[in-house]
Image (tube, protein in one colour):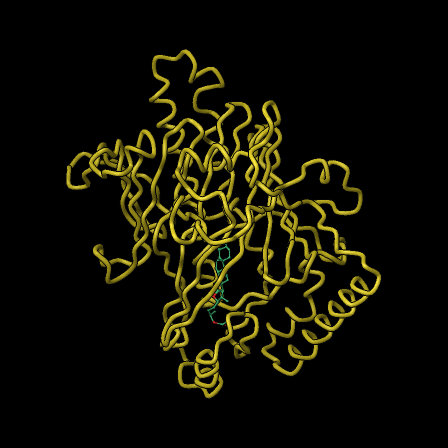
Length: 426
Ligand SMILES: CCC(=O)OC[C@H](C)CC[C@H]1O[C@H]2C[C@H]3[C@@H]4CC=C5C[C@@H](O)CC[C@]5(C)[C@H]4CC[C@]3(C)[C@H]2[C@@H]1C
């Protein structure tokens, strides 16, 4: 029970969510629930264990599928390593505000074109760079790329949310996906994003609980199906998950076919078992989310930042939030939002559309002509039997949502734009 739960501002906030209109940023949350961090920064949470992100690169090599007798074993080891990296990102993604700020908070709503860039340095692994860009403001969409050139590893993806509100919880569906490429191995992975809901609203101490599934589909055919559950579900513990590794999508239709089963808490400890049962005594430690602290990326000092960079752009608002000075927050936020409205108005009058910097939209409706490079989503969504449309992440092909008239348009990283970038540096 947080000290705010009986504050008038929180009770009036809870009343305001009753008249929710579909856009989270339209809700006036009380100052104590505001985060000084913009949503464009959340892409960094995919890369706070750079060693685990890059680890699969050292399992086998490019030829290990073609002719190695142990091709299956190598493919299994790699998708298990990718599952470990994926699990390692969740504590940062969904618990870091609770740990640093006392509860989940409402992030600042990024303006169109807002950037967040930085890097993780490591003598052995080399440099891993993050580029995160707000590619859409209505609806909010953040695109990101995390890449390590020394090991030829690239993660890219984008994220948008649709939120609905019930009396006591905020339910969030995620849009978008991530594509992880190990170019030395000629192997790539599709990662889908799980639904979530916010608990603890009535006691003014909100926290995220994951639900549903995330699918990790390898171009090798192997698939890792991660199922989430919270307190009160079968396991009774919060932040619980079960990940099952299957030879392919068809095998995943029956849990008995699991080659490995991983079970535990993504914000705590989990174990890995051979086969489909988690009752055998034979298991080993898989991952402990609290054993190794996340590595925060290096971000330039604000004095070195470009006006589009998040921490520089939001500095006055962030300082006001840290002071808890509501009038100042309101004044500084209104000033920034007014500037943005004027920019949009000028663009409309001059007919010049805002140009995204590092990402572009790609329409994947038509399959590429023979010989032309095809987007990884086409092959990977076929292997996983998932929709190729821009619908709720992880929608199964043929599902109701897949039959909607949604587009096949997705955001994609344009590496050449970064290579020729002259103003923004990490
Ligand atoms: C707006 C209503 C309000 O202020 O409610 C108070 C509460 C803080 C709950 C609403 C906010 O909760 C935040 C949690 C945010 C998600 C956390 C992590 C991720 C993963 C990342 O990879 C993509 C973004 C995502 C899904 C965040 C999206 C925005 C969320 C739901 C914030 C809510 C406004």
